[in-house]
Length: 267
Image (tube, rainbow, N blue to C red; front, side):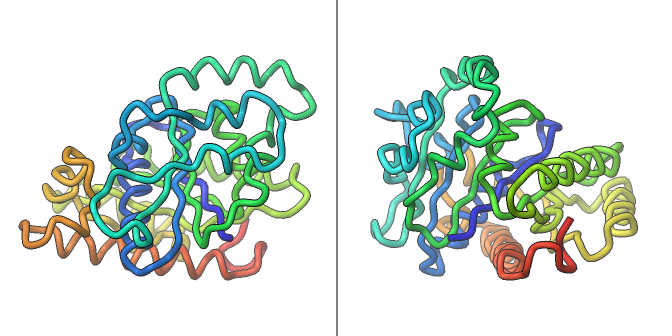
């Protein structure tokens, strides 16, 4: 089971959009996929068509219990055959109060999610982390095999990427096994001169770590608004192109999860 945490301490870069795009691409190819939403905004949860979940990830984080996430797995609300849809561990705004409570457990605060993951049986797990470097994100990084940095081509994007990479490096040094980078996913790449300039800055700074970009398209926004995967938008303008970009991104992420930590893609 490959576990990928999608991270950036900066909000508004589209981590959830990329999480859902990868989940849709994985499910479309028959990969058994789970999305774990540990962002109190719960956008990945609603994006998967789950409303008022009967149980959330907060249940698993309330105490240290190995395998407790198995009790929290729900079916997504996306249309389609059940066996070809991602599953979800939902979030809710109530999760925001969990972080200060985790801080009261100095021995287990950082890896409670990793313990809760024990016994799950999926091919791919995507963890949608909050836009912060708090204990929820740290739990996501301790639970993951790889970290996928999500950014957009704008001013200070390179500095933000450098900051989160330093955080991944520090966490890797504190784990029993290395935490490597799956790469840098550049989201919302527009055709403006400014966007192209900052994209080139990222490519020059991080070379092979920059993965195939996801361009800014109305189809992606429409899919998010309808709580549908872009792969299900059919003939809508830009939908096929967006789906192909998420497919290409998924291939690189899967390739990274099969590379030994500490190799060319590692930290």
